[in-house]
Image 1 (cartoon, rainbow, N blue to C red):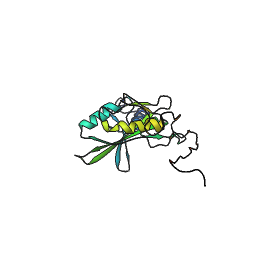
Image 2 (cartoon, rainbow, N blue to C red; image 1 turned 30 degrees about the horizontal axis):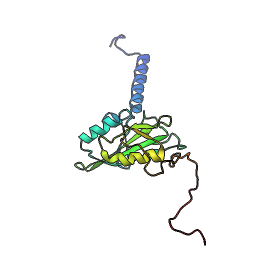
Image 3 (cartoon, rainbow, N blue to C red; image 1 turned 180 degrees about the vertical axis):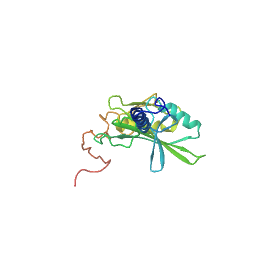
Length: 188
């Protein structure tokens, strides 16, 4: 071998460093499924779409056989900290909307976790794809204050219309509501 063909020590070190950088970048890249970051929780596939990817993802999952939306709920992570079992590239936000989908043909479930910022608590509705989410979306709005854009009736469902605030937010003031019984005498 001539000197021109023999790699120098510096060339070998540069090649090793570039291989390490490529490996680090691969480790930092989240695993994707259906084009969104994916994780696993208790044996169930969990997809982490952005708010922009949410409706398109649910629509494509419906075409793949996930015909039933079994649950839609809200979560408030105020004070929880950054350790939330999210894949790389998914920034934790204060609120999260969790959706459970079921495929009867595959006998499989898939969960979606969408991060919702406190500064803009809004997400597109799934009502046109899964009409069964009408009341769960209203409940999330009522309890957490997350609005669903395009929902046909975004009004309170559990609390009185004149109620101020959203009771399941972790910064909601604790209070006392007097219990009123119809026809009960107040004398003892």
